Every structure is written in C-alpha cells, then in structure tokens.
Image 1 (cartoon, rainbow, N blue to C red):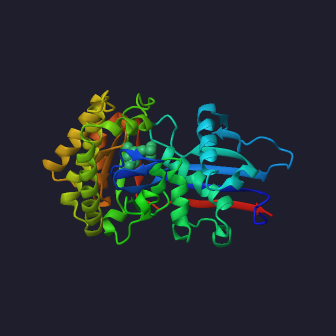
Image 2 (image 1 turned 90 degrees about the vertical axis):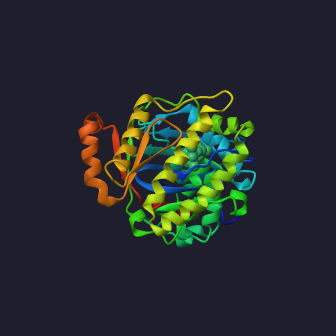
Image 3 (image 1 turned 60 degrees about the horizontal axis):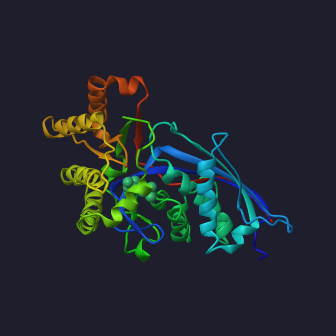
Length: 360
Ligand code: PMV
C-alpha cells in the first residue's frame, strides 16, 4: 500500500453532453441496454474539487465522504448519493476506505436551469477520484490536459459510468460513443474522423422549465425494465447508433435531423407509454419543436431539435446557420434571450484537469 498518496487535492472541470442517440434502460449496475452517442458541450460544465487525506490509524468509520458542498452549501440528499457511489467503488478499490474526502462542486450553468448535471458532476468526480485509484496516472497528466489521451481512459470512463451512465461519455472531445460492444458497455470511447461541420456544431438550449422533473431518469430507466416496446427499442437504438456515427463522419445533414428528432421523440414516447406513463414535455416544448421543424422543412434552414429527459428543447445547427437561428429565436421567442432562458452552447473538448497537488 506504499503507493497510496497521503493527502492532496484535485480539481477537474467536466462538461455535460447531449445524446443524439439515447441511452434508455440498464441492466446490472448501470450497463446500458443499447449503445448511445453524444455531443460534448462547452458551457454546461461542473467544476469538482476534492481534498483528501489518509484516515488516522485509529479511525473506525467506514464512510469515505467527509463533507459535500454544492456552491458553498450543504446538500444532504446529494451527499448520500456520493457516499453510496464511494461505497460501490470500494468493492473494486477497497483501499478507498482508507481515505476521507471532502467534495466541493459548482456548475457554470444556473442550477435551476433544468439542465441535467449528473453527467458533468460524476465525470468530474470520477476524474478526481481516478488519481487515487489508478496508480501511475498522475505521472502523465498536466493541467489543461483532457483525460481522453490517458492509457487508463477506459477505467476512468467506467468509474464515471458507475456514478451516472451518461457521465461515461463526458471525457471525450466533440463526440463520445458508449457502445454495448465495449465490454458490454463498461466504458465509453471517443468517436474520431468527425466531419468538420459537426465539430463546430451549435446547440441553443431553450429552458422551457427549470422545475425539478416529476419522474427522475433513474425511475424512468426502472420503468423501462418491463416496457411493452423494450425489445423494439433496443433494436432501434443499435441501428440508429450505427447510422448516427456514419452521419457524423460524412456530414450528412439531410439524414441527421430526422434521425436526431426520431431519437428524442422515441425517448419521450417510451416515457408516455410506460406503466404508469408520464409526460415531461410541456406545451412550449411542443410549440418550439414544431417551429424548428417548420424552419427546416418550409424555410430550408439546417436545424433540428433533441430533448433530454425533460421539457427543455436543444436546438442543433451547424455554425453557418447561427445568424438565421438567432433571428428566429429573437423574432418568435424574444423572452428566451431577454430572460436568459437560453444557453448558446457548442461542441467542445472533454473533461480537463484544472489542478492537482499530491503529497506522499
Ligand atoms: O445518465 P443517466 O443514468 O441519468 O441517464 C440519462 C439518460 C438520458 O439522458 C435520457 C439519455 C442519454 O443517453 O444521455
């Protein structure tokens, strides 16, 4: 156990991602039922700092988390989730119990925006924790480095997956693929040879509602276990995954938007047809989606939408359409910009190391 670092602190900044082909349904411990692919975002990020030290020999507690602060405030519910994540990791890394860890987290997007932060948070936390668990990693990494070049990236991505499935994809610049063929979905990888138009893709996120979801993704995944359309969805998801990767590499926008929208609407159709069913879209989501479609089908703009598990509409378009999409939003939905209810995000690089101090 000599390699154990005595104390130190690590800070990682990690982006959220938006899935173009959705992960829905899991087996065992957060292994996905179908493959998914996502775009890494720039502005929607979590910053997580851990400070840690080896427990005193006499310590009798098996808790790993000492304290958790989100934007300077305690959050007991989330602290419990972090502690249970640490307890889960201890099965593979028992020496984690020898540490006590403080976790400090903040988001670059307003936490009331309804943007899911579990992907950005758990990838940032896993990035921090990986320095304690993966021997030798610290020798290679400098600040501002992304994790994707590390030899141990599959293990790091797997660590994040165990906190939140979609977090496994946030380490990769531009696009992350989480395939069921990667050791049954144990980890995600980057997707290379992306067409330049997809590298500079834009995503304007319209915040239709910032209220907490009535049904969490965790409950949604659970309801999918006995879903009537389960097998069809798994087959559709795998096919769409292959098609989407080809589209991203060839720059085929004509096929892209219908497939993107099919995936979003399938996800919500599955929620609506669960037993019991539920609906997360709101009237304004529908209005925006219809308007975005008209913009494409009637006015010829290269634009489309997707949704995450919530009512907010992600409007996707290549950089060359930015001016026309902005004037559409200003003309038809002026309150979005005025009330800061839209985040103009774009495709970007994955999680980066911000700072590390390790004392042996
Ligand atoms: O990462 P989780 O377990 O919260 O599940 C998220 C699932 C979706 O966001 C709806 C889709 C996806 O692939 O990101």
